[in-house]
Amino acid sequence: MGEPDVSFFGCDGEDDKTSADYYFDSYSHFGIHEEMLKDVVRTKTYQNVIYRNKFLFQNKVVLSMGAGTGILSLFCAKAGAAHVYAVECSHMADMAKQIVETNGLPDGEVDDGVMLPDEASLYLTAIEDAEYKDDKIEFWSNVYGFDMSCIKKQAMMEPLVDTVDQKQIVTNCHLLKTMDISKMVPGDASFTAPFKLIAERDDYIHAFVVYFDVSFTKCHKLMGFSTGPRSRPTHWKQTVLYLEDVLTICEGETIIGSMTVFPEKEKHIRCMYFINSIQLFSSHVCFILSLMFCAGVREHIYK
Ligand SMILES: C[S@@+](CC[C@H](N)C(=O)[O-])C[C@H]1O[C@@H](n2cnc3c(N)ncnc32)[C@H](O)[C@@H]1O
Image (tube, rainbow, N blue to C red; front, top):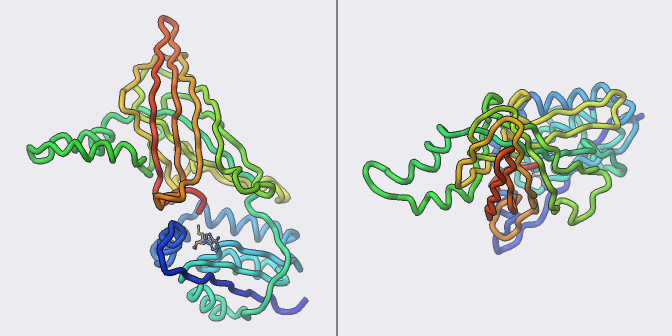
């Protein structure tokens, strides 16, 4: 086997800014790459997957789709890949080329592929979050004595990407969908899934929380990580969707509803979550809350 090569491919820009341009601009600055690299849960898992499963990489041709700084390409090259094709659309591609050269890997050509990770699951849970909701939403009702509540609506529409304390979780965590990434085709990232959340204690519910797990099922031993509130925090944090009305819930009561998720291209956001409607079933009475709740998430998902 000769020296592993790493080839870089960039993308041509267009005159008018599209949502793709906004997306790629966000990856042109080193700051986001620093955040991802310093996310030890994420980066160490990838490193362990690659270094401990060399049989997946040795003498193989690897395609690193969205190479960023080239870190995963370097891992693969070090694990014995015959060639790594690194594709990067942001200006970070120039840096990645330099990084590969600095680290003694020639810039060459690449042919075959390995899909890592190959499975992703999206989960939903519900939390008590009175204090933070007050701070982020109610805040606009009285700002130094002035009513700025028109901003409240916007703040409600834009879910918060932040770390949720696991003590805030009121219900079980419901698996919305598992995706076999290696078999996904365009359109598969859009779906509607029913959910059933059962309260684990008497409490109030202020928000739904969405997060994902990823798995590397082709490894010798199953590997992966979770971005959920019960796991070590990652740079993805969690996505919090506030409800306009507070729900009062008792242990054993259920919230049944459905959620629609789809990529949003027009508004320069990556993903839309719609809670279509929810029903809260208590042992005494059945409240039917028909909430039309819509939310977009800026800068989230699948880093
Ligand atoms: C989440 S980052 C991951 C970077 C790197 N793989 C790492 O693990 O640190 C995703 C990268 O993919 C790039 N990217 C996303 N979609 C792409 C596409 N269709 N073609 C090329 N690059 C893409 C982004 O610019 C970004 O740098």
